[in-house]
Length: 318
Image 1 (cartoon, rainbow, N blue to C red):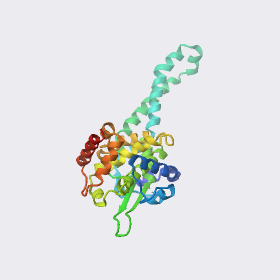
Image 2: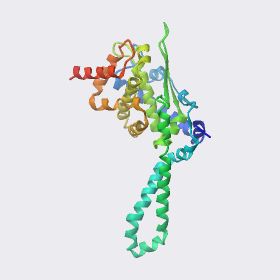
Image 3: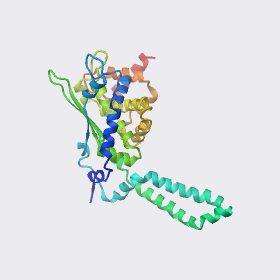
Image 4: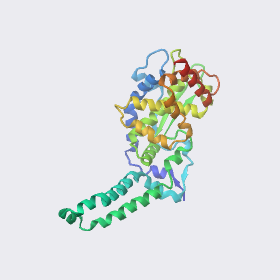
């Protein structure tokens, strides 16, 4: 019988939703300020963005339930044990490695000391089975990587940036949703704190908002039709790039956010990794200039189009 994600979410600690909400509230303004600095874009037209104004521009809700992309996601029953073992990987590695180290390194030292030999009392026989048990369970857990399987849907499943096209008299209506159950589940599977993962998801979704509707010095944003039809690798690569920059910028307030970004990145599919070579080849100034130029395209932007803009920006700023 297949396992549904709701079954696993129901097993999460009862305080998971509150932890996500508190992390969102704590870092919301801080992340927006960092994004304004890194992108050079603002969300309010014709005025500077105060903290109060920035909170109302793109509302953020912490949601229960599943994102649409995961509503039909199930786990084959033969992988039930692997899924249950995943949150225990770190502890099992510690048990395996520490038992082996004590057996190989500490016990020979103790055995030559009278009091040390007396302290052992023959209990060293339990160490090898403990190490072997931990190793066997780790191998079982490695048979199925739930985080990678979930993230392989190539959608923003931890959070979601949504938007509606503007009417004749109204600005585009945008919002962000954070799915506390998926954040709690993924954090337990890949071994990072809920708060740190929440910061990364919040930043990623706000990066979508800033790169899309953020206004440049000429008060121009990315045209809705062009953004909507641009290649996924471009849209997600930009969000990932600015998530990384923000994680570095707020390290004093969220010291583990960058490590959380990198750990999550290991599990994410290709469209979320295209920015990795950009980080080596191009400076933030190159990225900012390429972003501004890209957003003025009338049609959807392909990955090769954006990378051409990056090369052009590097040449112009050399």
